[in-house]
Image (cartoon, rainbow, N blue to C red):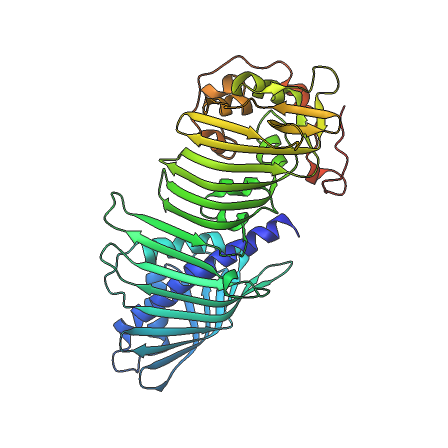
Length: 444
């Protein structure tokens, strides 16, 4: 599957259980304002909804089959400036209940290319406008289709509820993939606007159950997660505050992590392989990782630059057993590392070789990298391993620097002489012929 297609599918999923329910709630807000005696024309709906949403909304027909029920047919949403289509639905049925409203959307479709702009507008215009005028609203859609130029994808059984609260609107939502086997594979999301904070911010909680969430989807909230690779997925629980600096807590497992995309393509060092990262707990405060514990494992083979091994030995007090002769980029058979970060302190353990305790990385002929018992190092030195030169002293490009910015940043140190040789000799596994973990990575 093309990377762009995966990205747009993920954006569509986010919009389905976050932005689309909020849009439907806006329809009920307007209904209270303009329906009056139940004879409002479709032009009234179109004018009020377009004004509230900052986009152009058109309706083919509005009918009122019975008291308390309104049906909007052939609903289309387009960009107010360009006229480009964004979303459509065959019908939207709205029923007034004693404690609020029930909204059912029929055959909704969303244009993948316009998802980013749509999500931004809906968040700013709807979720960030306080709770005034919002009644409890339950929203459902049996299926939602994300339209793409090359392919389309459907998610099923979307259920959402938006209700006012003193601190700000609160939206809860759930859905599952078509191949889900039971309720344990249902995604649960909660978005809550907190007006008590200064400035106000949106908190987001996600529980995937036993299902897996593509990291490209989570990248809509935190774009650097796209650097985990196009096949990376997450299963677990996350809660974070969506603000300028941001804070978060996380527990779960990242699978299919492309170390080339995470390390080799972002830093002068080389580390390849497909990793599984289990996080028992992690906490980020004000954009910095302050605590974490878990494991990193690459079961199949990968590649590593000698410069990274040298930097790890120097700055993390590890034992480099790869030797100094041979090519700059060498193969390893397995990587297995336990980690615990507590503020400025980092502890590592190794289990790559069952017959030799403390081995972090092993190749066919023996250990590559080893850690001593009761290991302890400075967490700030993780940044030195990735960027062991003076570039730590200057601002970095946002995509490249995010991983480093999460960690305590050390002072600048002299540049390593052999980094350019290592970086120039490596072709990421996914870009090599065949794009698989068994493909040959060429060296000069």
